[in-house]
Length: 382
Image (cartoon, rainbow, N blue to C red; front, side, top):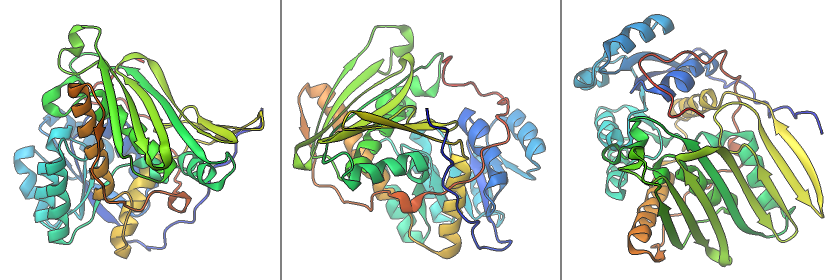
């Protein structure tokens, strides 16, 4: 087996000492274990404020990271108008993304919002319009758009090495336990919203196109934890040129994170494909011969913060934009319609935002450690 290949290297951003000052809004598990430890490796970014209703989180995390300013959610407007911040990283439950994005935009604050960007198309459109009207940048946190393994997969799929890409398939599953917000319909939880969005987005960037029709079925084994959202969902997306993408996502199965794009002359499989830390690996098969390439761990969140901050500092257009996030919401909304109607649902023609490509690759060092979260539980036990 070949030895792991080094990740793509990238020169530090030429911004001198200037940094974008962030408030982290929402201090759940992912914000604590993935986002906050990433800022030391994003040289043009710093956390200067925390927004949470949990006083223990405020106290312990501000002390740990040397953050002077903390606010409750009722004090969010004070944070936005304090003059202390340039941008917010919104890591709240999905149903709050729209409100907190619009409020930030109205105060001239740039927004990096976790995915899915919103729970409805109308909310997504409201977010885009608020940021446009106030002249601030809106980026949706698709960290894999900057990831070497995933963007090299785009390059391979589009290069002709596997011939014409014909179909995509993926499995993304994990055990989600307890009263996690991912299992609550009111907070925007669900398999499609939480993990299915990765599969939808991967199919879109590997095909470099938008689907025209969707079909989905859901299944539920009746466990109490799945009383509000389905246990699992299987999906088929039809793309132009008669290409198909299919995937299954589950909150009640063993941990799997893989996808495969199959062409007329070969195929490429990533396993794991969607992880936010650790090694990602390609298995490229052409003419019956498989080559393996591993991509070393790197700081996906640090890369994301560094890229967004650079776009602010240089006043550059960015990808993934709000339109990118909105297209996924349109698809998810149509998939729910398909589940309810038990039939395929055509999609209206969507805007074609610039699709991610290897030019976006941004590499930063991996986090030094994964801290023990404060008053926040991991999504599951897998």
